[in-house]
Image 1 (cartoon, rainbow, N blue to C red):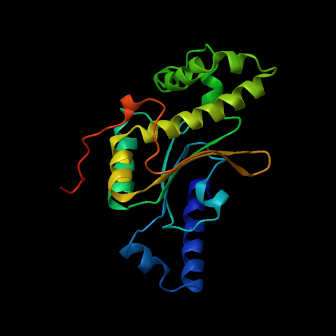
Image 2 (spheres, rainbow, N blue to C red):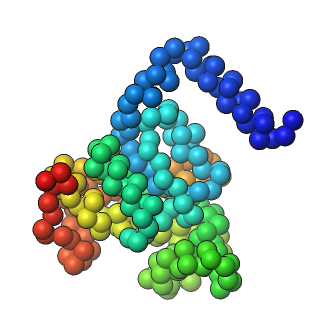
Length: 216
């Protein structure tokens, strides 16, 4: 039996187990979706959101990409964000990265990796803002992990700069924004930054003053 076939068998066993524990489990999931959280995380297979937070299907709306970036021209991310905020009415948005991130490590190098160079460029821009601090660290591991933290904080700020989030702050007084980092070595999530609804940004040029309700 090939590994992908084993996945299908494990799926059937899981579904059977869930129904045995709760006969209405899948019926409830099929009819309604009301997650409280939007999770923007790294695609790394070692950081599964449901496992590390012990949440169940239906509790977290999830978007993942390399190095958990929030890019203002990424229509995939923006579509997920708008749906989560305006339709699902999530109360919290979490950007969760992890120490030892391969994308961040690659961005710190001068190597060319093909098309992903365009993606990693956004992490290089974060490094450019903090070059002296990062270069002053003694080891590559320290430099990578510090950039991981700074990148997470920058992506949370990028969320706050979107009209989607600012509109929700104005009319719904939500969501709260959170920046978390996951440590692969001990499995613990640590908080780096929290931004409450309506917070002022580092520069008022990013704050919109003519926002209308999305359903007007």
